[in-house]
Image (cartoon, rainbow, N blue to C red; front, side, top):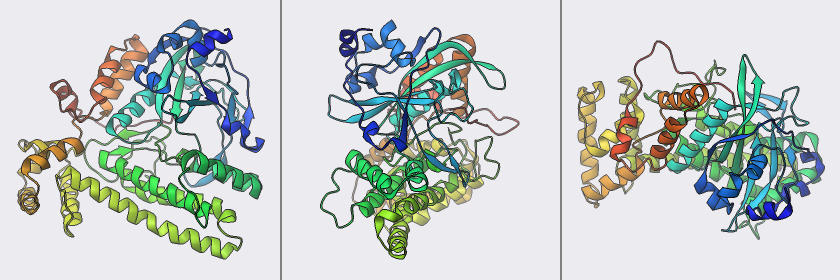
Length: 490
């Protein structure tokens, strides 16, 4: 590919991460695949990135998306990081991903462009560095659904079939996904720096993070304490949005917590149907460590590991550094609760605050759990006052709750119409229901039929539209003999 062709695609790359100490990455060469074929492409995201869709979908552009070659200005690297996986510390790193570089968008934002499944790197730990088609499509689908819901997330630009098989339990068609992120800085990146680098390495990483994500943090007495405070704020807001949407990440290891406050890595994730705080979908989370109800606590645990990594920068006296970190950590759960309760008020059409609101919400959730009620559809039914035909709404205790809620609504100055609109804007009509996700992935993988996936993406693009086209996608799954399970394929 010549220089003119590369430039014409709209690439404006920086490689700021590769200007960090070499401890944090390894430069790598591309691992070409046999016969790349573009199977799904995000036109709207390409436009946001300032990239020419036509060029990217050409043979030359597909070679970049498959990892067969890099665009002009690219310095491909694999990033190093470590982390706690299910509570156990281990060395990790980008074993099957390469960072092409950071694209400067027309809006002046710097975004990472990463290929996932592009082949072996120095961090592959014996793996082949490749990815299967189905989990790459799954990440594309769920991350775009999260974006539609207004939840901070990495995005997916494209998925390319490689024309090669990857060997897992059985041979599977291979694929490469292009992921777009504010950055791929993780709690585990800081753990890596603290464990294997010097204080100067850690300082360089923290300075980079501040410049990249928190440039407004200036003229403060302790910039590294401010870094910790800002990450806490973003995580509290993010986890609250997960809980409000019924999203279960499934593998909240410290290497899967991005300090930018984006949701990252969509392996065994899924959305809850019937409300149950103990819901787990991951096939390997046999103890329920990352269950829905545990997510706020686990985020706090991960933030504590982040704090441990930052201790050398917080204060020269270790005891004082620990005291400072502990003081900030105590603020996390309060911030989370504030975000979550504010979100629940919106879901119930409440504009003002009253002291009894938390109890009102908890009573509803307890009733939903007791009567095995669908989480998303319960709030949708309340929004449109369609409260017939379920065990929950026929229960006397729910009728009592409903009266209390109506009295609460009447105590605010806002009109019923305003409350209804607030609920419409806060309660999605659709989520990526697990049975619909599986239906789309099976059609794509086994039949080469992407129409099911595209239809699902279309209805999930604006989940608050409450349109007639979305109606069929609001139905919960039929009863099954066992719980739905997801796997760490991404």
